Structure formats: C-alpha cells, structure tokens
Image 1 (tube, rainbow, N blue to C red):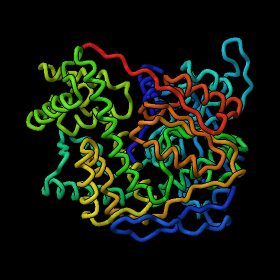
Image 2 (image 1 turned 90 degrees about the horizontal axis):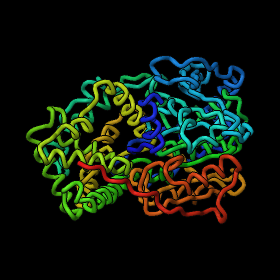
Image 3 (image 1 turned 60 degrees about the vertical axis):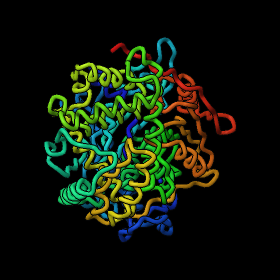
Image 4 (image 1 turned 60 degrees about the horizontal axis):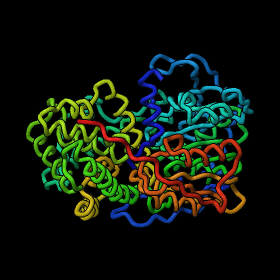
Length: 543
C-alpha cells in the first residue's frame, strides 16, 4: 500500500538542510503459508497459534539476548548523513524467529537522548520513543532530528527519540530486486486507460521483478509479523520494559500487529494515519480503496489551484485545471521534458500533492511555467535523481516483499484487469499506476501468509491514540475507524476536512496538543474521540 508520512517528508527536508517531511499474549497471526488464490476473496484468519509457537519462543529468546547486549551507540557512519547529537548503533535479530539461533541480521538504530528540559522547564525522562515512518520500505533513521523542531521540543525533553531502519531497509540487511539504474529508468508512460499491448508489457515487467526478488535468500522472512517481532527485540535492547511507539502510515500496521502479539509489552502507542487492519483488506483491497481515495484528493488539489487562477492561470474550475494537466501530459508523451520527464514522472510528482498539501504551490507553479514555455521547474521537481536510485529501489523492494509475503493476492491477471478497469472509470488518476506497482505480487515466488486478525479486548492494552485526517488518501479515514473499533480503549483524534498524510507534529496545534497530552501524561480525549479544525491551506506562490 503506497504510503509515506508527513513527518517523514518534513524530517527529510530538515536532513537535507543540515538538519527533514501504512501484535506477551496469544497470537492470531499466520506464519503458516496459504496457497495463492485467484480471484481474491475475503480472508478468514487462521486459528490462533499457540503462545508457545516456535516464533513466540524465538522472539523471547532474541529479546533476552538483546536486553543483555544493549545497543552500543556511537558516532553515526557518514553514509547516514546524521549530524550530532544523533548517535547510531545496531541490534541483532533472527532472520527467522522459528530458528532464533540461526542466521542473524543487524538493524541500524539512531538516537538523541532526552534533553530533560525545555527552556527553563525541567521535564522528567520517560524512556525511549521509537518511530517507524511507514512504507513498507521507509527508513526512520532521521527521526531523532525532529527534536530540533518546536513542535517536538516537549516530547524530545521527555523521551530519547529513537529511529531505526527496519529489516531490508538501508543498511539493515538491505533487499534489492532490480538494478537501480533500470528501476529509475525515465521517461516512462503512464496511461490512465492502458491498451492491451501496454498491459502485456507491464505483466512481463512484473514477472521479471518478482523473479529478481526471488534471488534474495530468506525473502519469505520480510513480513509485518517479523517487523513487529523486531520491534519487541529493539524494545528489549533499549532497556525498555514496555514499548512507547509512534507509527505513521504502514508503521501503524506494524504497531497494531505488535499490540495483537505483545499486548502486555505496550506502554503507549500512537497510530498516525492508520492502515485499515481488517484481514480481508490486507493488501489487495486496501490498494483499491487507496486508489479511489486519491481521486478525491486530486480533486482537492485542482479545486485549490482553480481558486488561485489569478496566480496560476490554469483554469477557474477543477475541470479546467484538469484540462491544463492533461495538455501537459499529452505533450510530455511525445516530447519528454529534459529527456527525463514523461507522463510517468509527471504522475508521480503530482501524486505527492495527494499526500501533502505543502506540495500544492510548487506543483502548480511547475504546471503553469511549463505551459508558459519554461519546463525547468517541472524538470527540477519530477526528474529522477540519480543519487537516490539505490535508496528508491531498495525501498520499493522492501515494499514489494512485505506486501506480497503478508497476504494472498490474485494470481490471475484477469482479476486485476477487471477490478482496476472498473475503478479507473471513476478514479483514473492513480488506479493503474498503483496496480502496476503491486502486480509482482501476482507472480510472487515466496509463500504467502494469512494476515493477523488485529483486535484486543477491554483491559488487554493501555489506552492508545489514533490520529487521522478525514480526507487522507494514502490511508483513507475508514481505516482509522476500523482500527479504533478493533483496539479496545483506543482514542481517535480526527483532523476534519483535511487530507495531509501523517499529522503528528505538523502544523495543526490542536492535533499536537492531543499528541503531547498522550505521550507526556498518558491522557486521551474524553469519550475516546475528538475533532480538530483543519490546518490552514497553503499560500499560493507566484508563477
């Protein structure tokens, strides 16, 4: 499920400026593989595995070792591009938790220790706050730097801010499925209603990509279940008896599976922009729902641009703005900008505007300038960056491995063709691009699992906090409500009439107030529900 957090985007930009933006109790998850199915039908979770399953025992053994070893934090390697006061270390985890004494992999970890004060105010340390930015495939090593941002000062005073690269990501036993140069190939086409010949071409690419992934030893062990187990080992290595965790986007699914597997190990959990954890939604159905939601967010962007036609001259209605966009798309199909930006790159760049409204002004400028004869802003924003090719391919490889391993997928392309063709009639913006990204799962070589049936009973967990924007497209709001129903005692804070993906520590002071109250005092909203007015829309930039 294509997703990334606003916090990730904010923190990333801080990094670039020298500082940066989808489960001990019994487990219901399935390490047991299930046969491929086609077409997809609702998945009934397998019966709970025994609390003394090999994976459960293996996690306990790995956590015990990690608690004894701790984490040796020191200067971060130059490749991490993390300045002081961030320090780095590693934690060893089993590749296969059923065999905890077998092959070990090392996860990279970063930390800034709690400052203990905010200005003249002294704040007691409350332990480590661990962050996962989502993906799958997101790298959270930058996270400790958010403590330099005003919105995070109080949290950074009370907590060690801890980031990490999950298994397969960055330097944590990295996965790769394709030559990064081939993965970053540009320009590309991106038809919203692809022809039969184009579909055959993409099927061949998906088969090839799946075969490339199969060359990785241990591919089957890159799963959400193991990401949750890794999180418990990391907790132990940090010396924390219970976990305090903030997961964004896919990171919320890791956190919800952790809550299912290890409810007695939970101190506080924050779910920022929640993935729908219902087993029949993981992952095929969630991706269809996501594609439909992006159509609404794409309309939000075009409505904003139309309101500022005096600045951008792209049209006074969303429909006129769409015609301007389609005109650019048609020209790029025949004459790529800078020989690198075709319709595929255009679509990817404007998809980001569906995630974060911070992108709206610059994307509108790029469109306007292109139509005025200046392609440079569009090239700057949309052309692939060669230096990022390895990182991007790695992230995509992990994304693919986790989603394909986690659940059954349709194995007959006719199912994909039927579902996406229907959806593209009403939601053309993202539908087929999302389908092509996930299509390797139809031809996946590794065994698939049944998804965990995430749910907790009253009293199993301490109160948890869910944050959600009502018009979020990457993790649609229905997913937050589903998680709220499944985690007894959870509280849901909604940013109304807003669609930024990932809202913790962002521009909404109301949301941040609830986040601070929860992490610093353990307080959740009365009646387990609260609403915040939307943050202000972005200010237009002159073209």
